[in-house]
Length: 159
Image 1 (spheres, rainbow, N blue to C red):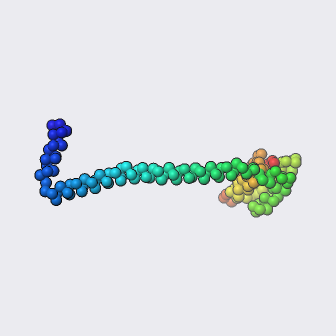
Image 2 (cartoon, rainbow, N blue to C red; image 1 turned 90 degrees about the vertical axis):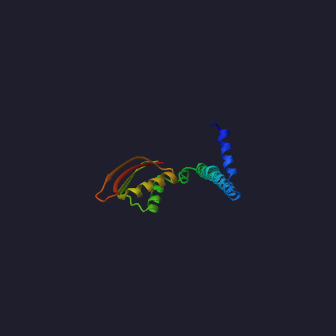
Image 3 (cartoon, one colour; image 1 turned 135 degrees about the vertical axis):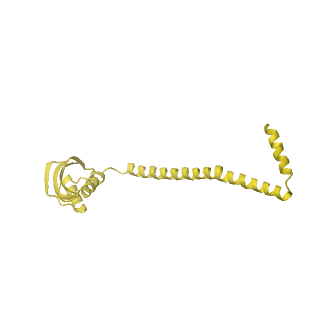
């Protein structure tokens, strides 16, 4: 049996149906075709378009943020005439860090000791020094304390 014969058989079967049943078959067919179109063509295309638009705007926002960071000078205070000691003293006061000992090594280098400081607080302070003041950590030495999360540290900072 070839395809044309199958179509002819189905058409003959359709023609034997009452008018009411024929309308029901037509309506059901239209509904199935619309559902197929919506769920398998329209919805995937629409969600892909929304996703692409969202990714585009996310990338544009990231690009604008990166442009802003690129234009901002690294270490706004580093370009000023403040000494490294003045920068360290100001930033420790702002971050609530108590220095045990400070030893200047030369004009642009300091050795600093800090006891019993939370590790996260130290890392935040080092990040502030780097990002806002252009101060680098040349070396760092850390020892655990008996308190969980607290350390004793010695740092060499350079400008």
